[in-house]
Image 1 (cartoon, rainbow, N blue to C red):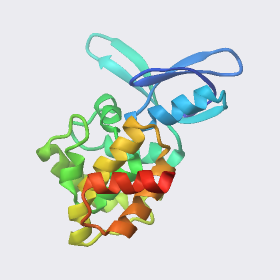
Image 2: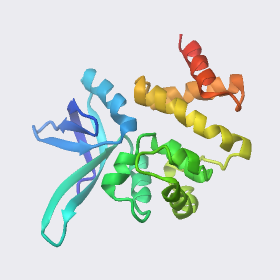
Image 3: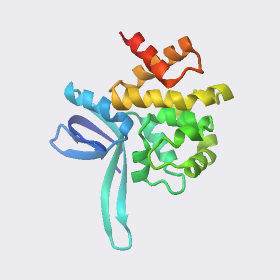
Image 4: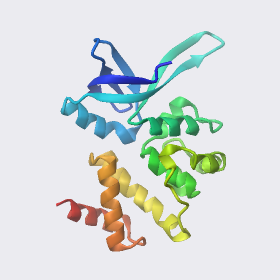
Length: 211
Protein backbone atom coordinates (compact mmCIF):
# COMPACT_ATOMS: atom_id res chain seq x y z
CA UNK A 1 0.00 0.00 0.00
CA UNK A 2 1.47 3.34 -1.09
CA UNK A 3 0.42 6.01 1.45
CA UNK A 4 2.67 8.97 0.66
CA UNK A 5 4.97 10.12 -2.15
CA UNK A 6 7.39 13.04 -2.17
CA UNK A 7 9.17 14.54 -5.13
CA UNK A 8 8.93 17.07 -7.94
CA UNK A 9 5.93 17.45 -10.23
CA UNK A 10 7.06 17.24 -13.85
CA UNK A 11 3.66 17.38 -15.55
CA UNK A 12 0.12 18.41 -14.65
CA UNK A 13 -2.82 17.19 -16.72
CA UNK A 14 -6.57 17.65 -16.35
CA UNK A 15 -7.08 14.73 -13.96
CA UNK A 16 -3.60 13.65 -12.92
CA UNK A 17 -0.04 14.73 -12.20
CA UNK A 18 3.29 13.06 -12.85
CA UNK A 19 5.47 13.16 -9.75
CA UNK A 20 9.14 12.18 -9.95
CA UNK A 21 10.82 11.00 -6.75
CA UNK A 22 14.48 11.71 -5.87
CA UNK A 23 15.28 8.11 -6.90
CA UNK A 24 14.09 8.84 -10.45
CA UNK A 25 10.80 6.90 -10.32
CA UNK A 26 7.87 8.82 -11.87
CA UNK A 27 4.34 8.11 -10.65
CA UNK A 28 1.07 8.99 -12.37
CA UNK A 29 -1.28 10.19 -9.64
CA UNK A 30 -4.95 11.06 -10.07
CA UNK A 31 -5.98 14.33 -8.42
CA UNK A 32 -9.22 16.21 -7.92
CA UNK A 33 -9.88 19.29 -10.01
CA UNK A 34 -9.71 21.49 -6.90
CA UNK A 35 -5.96 20.82 -6.60
CA UNK A 36 -4.84 21.24 -10.21
CA UNK A 37 -4.02 24.96 -10.15
CA UNK A 38 -2.14 24.74 -6.87
CA UNK A 39 -0.10 21.82 -8.19
CA UNK A 40 0.63 23.74 -11.40
CA UNK A 41 1.94 26.61 -9.28
CA UNK A 42 4.16 24.23 -7.31
CA UNK A 43 5.48 22.73 -10.55
CA UNK A 44 6.26 26.18 -11.92
CA UNK A 45 8.12 27.09 -8.73
CA UNK A 46 9.94 23.74 -8.82
CA UNK A 47 8.98 23.18 -5.20
CA UNK A 48 9.11 19.75 -3.59
CA UNK A 49 5.65 18.23 -3.17
CA UNK A 50 4.33 15.66 -0.71
CA UNK A 51 1.12 13.91 -1.71
CA UNK A 52 -0.89 11.66 0.59
CA UNK A 53 -2.09 8.79 -1.56
CA UNK A 54 -4.73 6.09 -1.80
CA UNK A 55 -3.67 3.00 -3.77
CA UNK A 56 -6.38 0.88 -5.39
CA UNK A 57 -6.93 -1.58 -8.25
CA UNK A 58 -9.21 -0.71 -11.15
CA UNK A 59 -10.70 -3.20 -13.57
CA UNK A 60 -12.50 -6.51 -13.73
CA UNK A 61 -11.69 -9.03 -11.01
CA UNK A 62 -13.32 -11.87 -12.94
CA UNK A 63 -11.01 -11.45 -15.94
CA UNK A 64 -7.97 -10.58 -13.87
CA UNK A 65 -7.49 -7.32 -15.77
CA UNK A 66 -6.65 -5.07 -12.85
CA UNK A 67 -4.58 -1.91 -13.05
CA UNK A 68 -2.97 -0.22 -10.03
CA UNK A 69 -4.04 3.40 -9.54
CA UNK A 70 -2.99 6.17 -7.19
CA UNK A 71 -5.10 9.09 -5.98
CA UNK A 72 -3.21 12.00 -4.40
CA UNK A 73 -4.18 14.66 -1.84
CA UNK A 74 -2.51 17.74 -0.43
CA UNK A 75 -2.99 16.63 3.19
CA UNK A 76 -3.68 13.53 5.26
CA UNK A 77 -7.02 15.06 6.32
CA UNK A 78 -8.15 15.39 2.70
CA UNK A 79 -7.19 11.76 2.09
CA UNK A 80 -9.21 10.68 5.15
CA UNK A 81 -12.24 12.58 3.84
CA UNK A 82 -11.92 10.89 0.44
CA UNK A 83 -11.82 7.43 2.03
CA UNK A 84 -15.04 8.27 3.85
CA UNK A 85 -16.59 9.70 0.67
CA UNK A 86 -16.03 6.52 -1.36
CA UNK A 87 -17.83 4.46 1.30
CA UNK A 88 -21.08 5.81 -0.13
CA UNK A 89 -22.67 3.05 -2.25
CA UNK A 90 -22.12 3.69 -5.94
CA UNK A 91 -19.11 5.99 -5.49
CA UNK A 92 -15.90 4.30 -6.60
CA UNK A 93 -12.39 5.72 -6.20
CA UNK A 94 -12.51 6.72 -9.89
CA UNK A 95 -15.85 8.54 -9.66
CA UNK A 96 -14.95 9.87 -6.22
CA UNK A 97 -11.81 11.68 -7.37
CA UNK A 98 -13.70 13.02 -10.39
CA UNK A 99 -16.26 14.52 -8.01
CA UNK A 100 -13.54 16.46 -6.16
CA UNK A 101 -13.93 19.62 -8.24
CA UNK A 102 -14.30 21.64 -5.02
CA UNK A 103 -11.97 21.46 -1.99
CA UNK A 104 -12.76 18.54 0.35
CA UNK A 105 -13.36 20.95 3.24
CA UNK A 106 -16.06 22.70 1.24
CA UNK A 107 -17.68 19.37 0.34
CA UNK A 108 -17.53 18.31 4.00
CA UNK A 109 -19.22 21.56 5.01
CA UNK A 110 -21.99 20.93 2.48
CA UNK A 111 -22.53 17.43 3.87
CA UNK A 112 -22.62 18.72 7.46
CA UNK A 113 -25.15 21.38 6.43
CA UNK A 114 -27.25 18.87 4.44
CA UNK A 115 -26.72 21.14 1.43
CA UNK A 116 -27.70 18.83 -1.44
CA UNK A 117 -27.83 21.77 -3.87
CA UNK A 118 -24.09 22.34 -3.58
CA UNK A 119 -23.28 18.63 -3.79
CA UNK A 120 -25.17 18.35 -7.09
CA UNK A 121 -22.63 20.77 -8.59
CA UNK A 122 -19.98 18.06 -8.24
CA UNK A 123 -19.36 16.02 -11.43
CA UNK A 124 -21.34 12.79 -11.42
CA UNK A 125 -23.40 13.66 -8.33
CA UNK A 126 -27.14 14.02 -9.01
CA UNK A 127 -29.84 14.94 -6.54
CA UNK A 128 -30.52 11.38 -5.41
CA UNK A 129 -26.82 10.63 -4.96
CA UNK A 130 -26.31 13.93 -3.07
CA UNK A 131 -29.03 12.97 -0.60
CA UNK A 132 -27.44 9.53 -0.21
CA UNK A 133 -24.04 11.13 0.49
CA UNK A 134 -25.61 13.29 3.20
CA UNK A 135 -27.52 10.45 4.84
CA UNK A 136 -24.44 8.19 4.81
CA UNK A 137 -21.78 10.66 5.96
CA UNK A 138 -23.40 13.51 7.88
CA UNK A 139 -22.80 11.98 11.31
CA UNK A 140 -19.41 10.52 10.40
CA UNK A 141 -18.12 13.80 8.95
CA UNK A 142 -17.83 15.39 12.40
CA UNK A 143 -15.31 12.72 13.43
CA UNK A 144 -12.85 13.63 10.68
CA UNK A 145 -9.99 16.01 11.47
CA UNK A 146 -10.77 17.95 8.28
CA UNK A 147 -14.27 18.78 9.50
CA UNK A 148 -13.65 19.04 13.23
CA UNK A 149 -14.48 22.75 13.39
CA UNK A 150 -17.50 22.57 11.08
CA UNK A 151 -20.82 23.58 12.59
CA UNK A 152 -24.20 23.02 10.98
CA UNK A 153 -25.06 26.52 9.73
CA UNK A 154 -28.38 28.31 10.05
CA UNK A 155 -30.99 28.04 7.30
CA UNK A 156 -29.99 31.52 6.13
CA UNK A 157 -26.39 30.41 5.69
CA UNK A 158 -27.46 27.22 3.92
CA UNK A 159 -29.34 29.24 1.34
CA UNK A 160 -26.23 31.28 0.62
CA UNK A 161 -23.80 28.36 0.46
CA UNK A 162 -24.39 27.33 -3.20
CA UNK A 163 -23.50 30.86 -4.30
CA UNK A 164 -20.36 30.75 -2.20
CA UNK A 165 -19.56 27.40 -3.82
CA UNK A 166 -19.88 28.99 -7.26
CA UNK A 167 -17.53 31.77 -6.21
CA UNK A 168 -14.96 29.28 -4.89
CA UNK A 169 -15.22 27.26 -8.10
CA UNK A 170 -14.42 30.39 -10.15
CA UNK A 171 -11.56 31.55 -7.91
CA UNK A 172 -9.88 28.17 -7.48
CA UNK A 173 -10.98 26.25 -10.57
CA UNK A 174 -10.73 29.03 -13.18
CA UNK A 175 -8.53 31.83 -11.83
CA UNK A 176 -5.91 29.77 -10.02
CA UNK A 177 -6.29 31.15 -6.50
CA UNK A 178 -4.98 28.86 -3.78
CA UNK A 179 -7.80 27.43 -1.69
CA UNK A 180 -6.89 29.05 1.68
CA UNK A 181 -6.47 32.46 0.01
CA UNK A 182 -9.80 32.12 -1.83
CA UNK A 183 -11.64 31.03 1.32
CA UNK A 184 -10.25 34.00 3.24
CA UNK A 185 -11.25 36.47 0.53
CA UNK A 186 -14.77 35.03 0.20
CA UNK A 187 -15.28 35.18 3.98
CA UNK A 188 -14.17 38.84 4.02
CA UNK A 189 -16.39 39.68 1.04
CA UNK A 190 -19.45 38.01 2.60
CA UNK A 191 -18.76 39.74 5.92
CA UNK A 192 -18.77 43.04 4.06
CA UNK A 193 -21.77 42.41 1.79
CA UNK A 194 -23.92 40.08 3.87
CA UNK A 195 -24.92 36.45 3.33
CA UNK A 196 -27.65 37.41 0.83
CA UNK A 197 -25.14 38.85 -1.65
CA UNK A 198 -25.21 37.42 -5.17
CA UNK A 199 -22.21 35.50 -6.51
CA UNK A 200 -21.30 38.29 -8.95
CA UNK A 201 -21.24 40.87 -6.16
CA UNK A 202 -19.09 38.60 -4.00
CA UNK A 203 -16.63 38.12 -6.86
CA UNK A 204 -16.40 41.87 -7.45
CA UNK A 205 -15.73 42.43 -3.76
CA UNK A 206 -13.07 39.68 -3.79
CA UNK A 207 -11.33 41.38 -6.72
CA UNK A 208 -11.45 44.72 -4.87
CA UNK A 209 -9.94 43.13 -1.77
CA UNK A 210 -7.22 41.46 -3.89
CA UNK A 211 -5.89 44.76 -5.28
